[in-house]
Length: 378
Image (cartoon, rainbow, N blue to C red; front, side, top):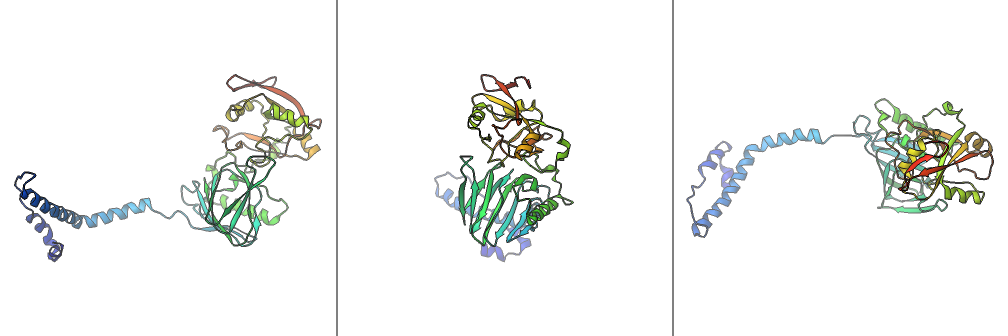
């Protein structure tokens, strides 16, 4: 049939189709006539299908072209964002490579190559990061189960590792010619990655400054970046030089254990979040913070009043005022975006006078809710 059909001029096919349709008469389902008719109807359905497409082909093609312009588009153009000491990072999509695209902050993807053995500093990220190794291998240093024991996870070629938001880790590249593909959700930006760089390394400072300038250039509106855990360093700390008292809350048993051994106290998340101790200059906020993070803990809690000037003078431990940070994998409160918090970059000595100036008990309900700090905040 199809051979015959193709011999018919196109402008006659429509007429032929309708004039060639059989006129059926009612038949019983079991009659030979019905079986013969069914076979003829199957051919007719083929004719009908061909007839429909022959008349609608151009329309369907045009519609597909129209839809494709809406659902398929170029969203990025790769750019080299880091090229230093054998390390090259070429961003394919993200805040730099997709600067003209509205969803550029949703995710970032890059191609990274390391020509010789190297390592990054300790990093604390505020995004989920997938690393797929295509060549070589990566050693991921981290503190997973113990604040005192460093662990190493080896990611070999062909493997993908997920590093969760809020994790503190250090990537080491033990062999040259290592290549990997990082995918960050949301997109990478300097404000979401805390680097524990050597401040005296001018080359690293140039790399960081270049990354910052790339993300701040015209067309890159970083105002959409989450403040939660950004650690951007953009807060003018000189504004807070006159603040002497800051406050840290902790489990009473952990504080007393450290004090009994005359050693510094470190919070359980100290290594995971970037080697700092959470604190506040507004003690009233501790009740809200405690109910956000710690209601599932058991036992008594205390609030330590600290003299941050003495902490820096005696121990060389500095306090940096920054945006509110997560605790482990738990995000900050939605209404904390305007909070400025003092973060103590070190532990708290228990055996030196003049640093911990007061200790207040925290009152809790039977279901674990924090109610007040006795003598300090209700």
